[in-house]
Image 1 (cartoon, rainbow, N blue to C red):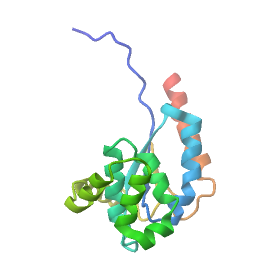
Image 2 (cartoon, rainbow, N blue to C red):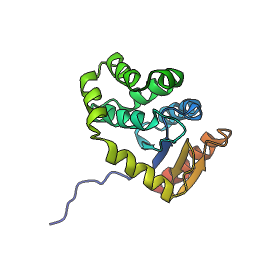
Image 3 (cartoon, rainbow, N blue to C red):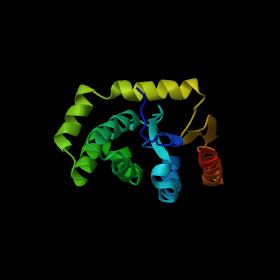
Image 4 (tube, rainbow, N blue to C red):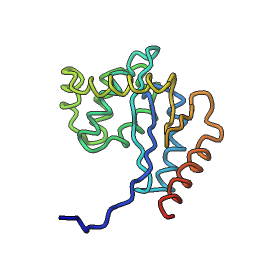
Length: 174
């Protein structure tokens, strides 16, 4: 039996290799907001974790972002933490739980998730995949097999991503 339901076109995926204690990732937020505003649900922005050893709270922040995703608020949480990188530097895990509370998330569940490590495998897998494809810093974007390093410079990066997305979307219409 064949399925005659219309198939939805596959949306391009932009993997954003990010670290929540990274000032460059905070700078990239405006570009990510602009991409979401321009493309809406025609582009999937997928947060990928790449905690850097030089930031002592980055691994916990990545786990906290996964808990926020579990509770349905990944991007608001990521934006809130990135917007306050200096507070994360000073406050560590208690700060991560406080941001959850401020956003109306289950802060006790955040605390438990950070203690029991339920999201460690996701963070480890992202980091391993990032290393395997050549990610060395954050932010790094990967779209349609092309890696764009935003850690060196944000200059012109959004325009390059938009050109790739526009090309992919135009290819779907053909």
